[in-house]
Length: 336
Image 1 (spheres, rainbow, N blue to C red):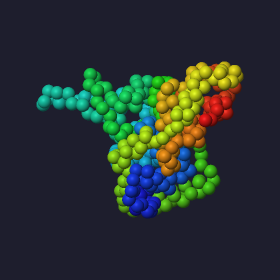
Image 2: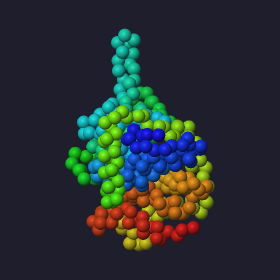
Image 3: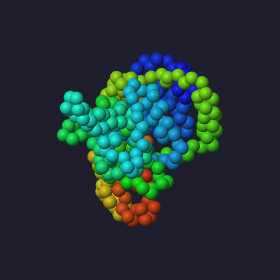
Image 4: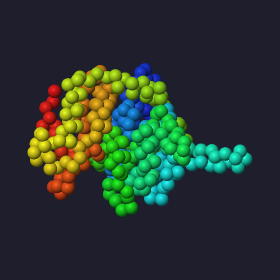
């Protein structure tokens, strides 16, 4: 099989859901070099039926990552560029008057797609972010007096640029909490940069010819079946209690260390508990195991907590980050 990016990749027909997702991850990592963690988290979000917030400098393949994934999953993809002059109707759609029939007809907006890239989401005003919030949190959009359901397969990957802050509108806490994970990505290393150079040259050469359609690797039925298997994956009651204690520790850190109490303004919400449970199960499922372990929780807890814990002014003044706080709590809360 030859991908739309011009890379020749041998693909066998997936036998089951787990094999299908392994093939998907393999192909995606061959086309997106140096961002294996981002690709893994994208697949995990798909398995958890959640949404991602990705923060990184320009040119780190954030847009390409979700596009490569969407081209190989049954469904449609749309990129929405958020700008200060964007209106809610530009996102959700609007009602158009048909004079012949004397009726209003709803014209769906770009939000009604299976996979959405919300590029630079913090550049849109609050009323647009509010429309996005309803779609993400409730899988529905309300226009006028009518509510329209979203597609069953619905994934939003929103991006933020940490460099330029002028003309931006910080996302409200209610919307941040709707994201399953907050991922911060950095620059690739020297070896990956050389591989990117080779890949880009090959893609530029192949684009001079005819580009074939990418082969679909995962159907929507396989996605839904995989989501069901992730939910059914075994997690010991002691591990579930461990997740609860970790989340509770962000709300009352003083019980574990008196110094930590002055660093936290607000702890993580119950969505953090649910997200930590789902992501740990998804990681174990992708790893080919039938049970979750403490390592799965430790691997995803920073992305799940990063946007949900609000630090105090003292913590920000001292340069303490949420990741550092989580590391302290991992050292204090006993592992079962």
